[in-house]
Length: 210
Image 1 (tube, rainbow, N blue to C red):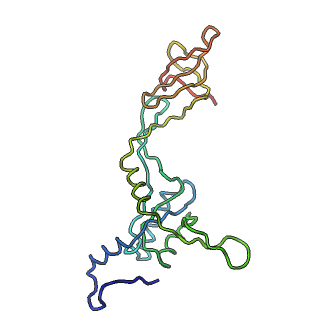
Image 2: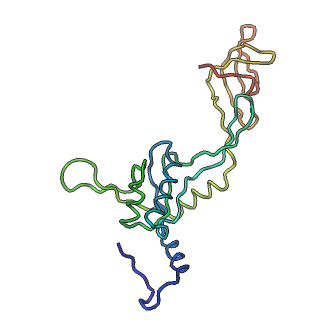
C-alpha cells in the first residue's frame, strides 16, 4: 500500500519530520478482543510492534478507562479503574497490509471494527474492512477518560435481600430499597414489630444474602 506525498523526491523528510508526518497520518481504530484479555492484547501488540519493526506506523495502543472507587464489605474504599469499552482496544496506526497483519494476528484479537465486505461466492462471513473512528468520537472518548469523576461501585442494588451484621438491628433480614454509594449507606425495609420499616444502614453493617 502506498501513500501520496507532496514532498519532492530530492528533498527527503528528516527522521523527526517523518515521525511527525506519520503521527498526523495515523488514525484510531477499534479492535475487538476476547473478554477479559484487553491488557494482554495491549502488551502483545506492543511487543509485536517491536518484533516486526513497525513502530513508525503503529503509534499507540490504549484501553480507555475511567476512575472508580469500589466499596468493600468492611466499608473501606479501593481505588480502581473501569474500562469504558470492555472487550475492545484502541490502536492508533497507519493502516496497510503489514500493520493489519501485526494487529489482526495478535493472540486473542477477534477482529477490527469496520464494514463487512460480502463474499462474492459461497457461504460464510466476508472480510471486515477496518474503519477509522471519527475525530469527534476520539475526542469524546479521551475527554471522558480524563475528566470524569470517580464512579463509586458496590455489590449491592435495590431489591437485594440483606441481613444486618451489627448495630441495634443485628440479625434482622430485609430488602434494599435505596443505595447511596457516595455516602457508603443504604436504606432497607426491615420487619420491625410486624411492620416493614425503612432503616438507614452503613454498608459494613450488612451482608447480601445469596
